Length: 157
Picture 1 (cartoon, helix red, strand yellow):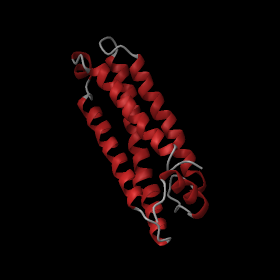
Picture 2 (cartoon, rainbow, N blue to C red; picture 1 turned 90 degrees about the vertical axis):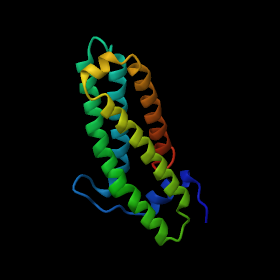
Picture 3 (cartoon, helix red, strand yellow; picture 1 turned 30 degrees about the vertical axis):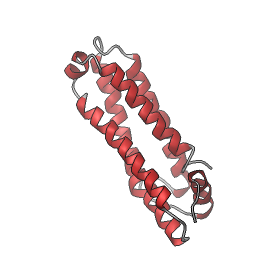
Picture 4 (cartoon, rainbow, N blue to C red; picture 1 turned 45 degrees about the vertical axis):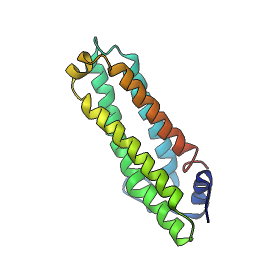
């Protein structure tokens, strides 16, 4: 059975229970992920507003905040949310290929973002690279694609 991605979340929230981990209950995992999206977006927006030549330290701070929260966010998704949705779909004998493709695409986006964060982990790299503002804008847009895809797809409820 081929299931549209937007249906997966509705079905998931009505039929599946996430295992509780030490950070959150099953009831609020999606709300937590959405709240993290807002905080991640805010950190990137703050970095964008800052002049990269004059205040690279502030940008590093914003990017470090972003990176630390992103690591937590990805841990929840990759180790709790996505594995359990796949497991439950398999138990219900649903087609999981579209969902696996979606997850792989989300992991590719995460890899791109992490590579950017590693590249610009020092103030001198931010200050000296004239392409930094453009690359930050690309990362911001890439992140928005991921966020929107998740919230309009598997998070929708």
